[in-house]
Length: 249
Image (tube, rainbow, N blue to C red):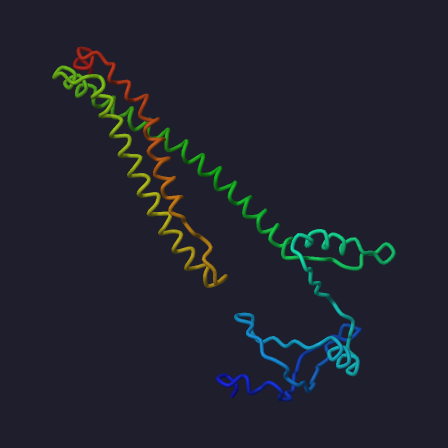
């Protein structure tokens, strides 16, 4: 009724039903009339009813329900005092028993940042190990290429190719392998990230995985550097004597 003309409900008296708890921890069904003072859009949180403390306290007391407050909202004027205020509240005691357990947005963000940093460190360690393994695999691949193409190297040297040309041959092949790996890795990262975002968005309604252009550029630079360094040892095949290379089995 009030979906399109929701302002019309302001000032109306409505019946609110909710469940409270008694002092003996038993449910108490509340059925009270309240006057609407305003309407707030709570987004995806669903329907929310807010009433002032005096009204709620009187309603609960009349229904013989537990009217003791369970939490208190504290508004701090300056964000730089959030942590100190939270610490001061947590130190409040009633004899030997703490009276409050304060939690602020800052403490929640600190926890999230700690978890995020831990996950980042773990992923960075895995990435580092992957880089070392990829470099070793490029070296092994290039050494296999050298051993299988020894006669080819000898023929090229006999035809007048210099050692620098042979080094360029193996270096360019290694760089091509590195670039191909970077393209495949980047494509898989975007593909898997899109699938995970699609699945996680149904739960968190938030894009969890985001790949920045700088990360892509860094990945390609690292692929080129690693493949170039991995090609240095196999490229020493350019030092082979042409006669020995031609006579190799």
